[in-house]
Amino acid sequence: MLFDFNDPYITRLVQTAEFGIERESLRVNYDGRLAQTEHPFIGNPQIDRDFCENQVEMIGDVFNDPADLNRQLGSLLDEIDAELVKNDELLWAFSNPPRFNSEDEIPVARFCGALQGKSEYRHYLAEKYGKKKMLFSGIHLNISFTESLLQAAFVQSGAQIYTAFKNDFYLRLSKRLTQYAWLAVYLTAASPVADASLDVKSNVYSSIRCSEHGYWNDFTPILDYSDLKSYVRNIARYIVNGDLKSASELYYPVRLKPRGANSLQTLLQNGVNHLELRVLDVNPLTRTGIFTEDIRFIHLLLLWFCSMPDFDFDEEKQIRAIADVKAAAVYGNAEIKNRAVKTLEEIKRFTLQYFPDFLNIVDYQLNKLHDGNSYAEIVSRRFTDDYMAKGLLLARRYQGGERDV
Image 1: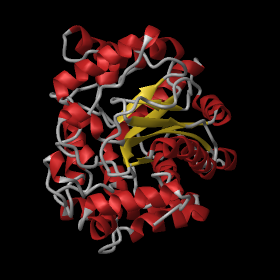
Image 2: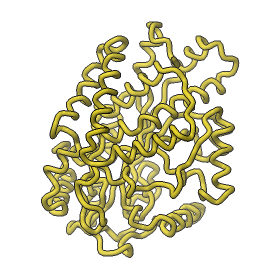
Image 3: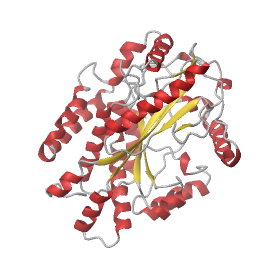
Image 4: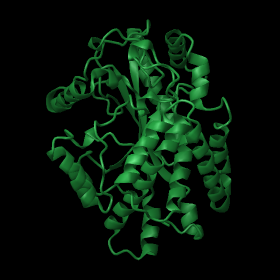
């Protein structure tokens, strides 16, 4: 157990965490085609672009309350829409792209000057993985616990060095979050519908970007979680061997991130600052792309992990974890649904014992397991018929200020 939940001081502190978010979305013209204009937010640190020039990336601040995080996303969307409307452009509200004729309509992100290397890296990705995959948009959720909590847990643990304790804490948490990333996929998958130009049939997958058709390495990375040096050395070896161009090419459900520049050197030097969960779809049922209730659930999920003993996340278990993510991305997977029911029931028992005020968070997720209540099922019902026309109408409604549909 990482925290003593019988200690009222610890139990109070764990109810607050730190949340940050990165959300991607494609810019489209009023006819639904991918915008071919240059990124219109040069110099704005919170509105960047990612793989392709027409993919906007919103980068939020860190908040203790997920509701505040979502409010900021709404403000960023207001700023983006105010600019896009000048060029008759909209933000596409789905993880899956709109219709496109060829990869010529997918311009690789153009960075200049000191950032030229970012463009060269993206050209490398386009060549290796194909430009079509650059069109997938998703949400990366960053989460960490407060320093006051970790300091209190450090004192209780009897460990000698705080930085080593903190790194080991996040390594253990990362193992569990990777092992259960399938559950996050199953509960937040919201992209079962796609245009024929993506060449993936609709309603075969609930999340195409998390399925076998998404962004994955052409091998299954096996990571060493024994300590931070081993973890970093392991990834560095993949780079030296030519399997990866850089640490950013590690397409894994969960990443350990440092404070400051995202590099292995910074991670080793500064230590782990937070976990990045990378498997969440942009949810078209809400303007911000993510419901506050789902962020709260990820927090509760981490608390549940903190009640578990450590375990050996060996090669077999890591391969299984990746396979489980892809299985959870299959539309209507009954086996995964049954596992989700059992897992949520376990989480509910844990919540009832330690955090009874959080029961509504679990019940919100359990409700999705009723037939027809999952995000994927709702999106399928509403958008399978005429995805493009309905997608454009939705983008206009969100640009007009509507919050949910």
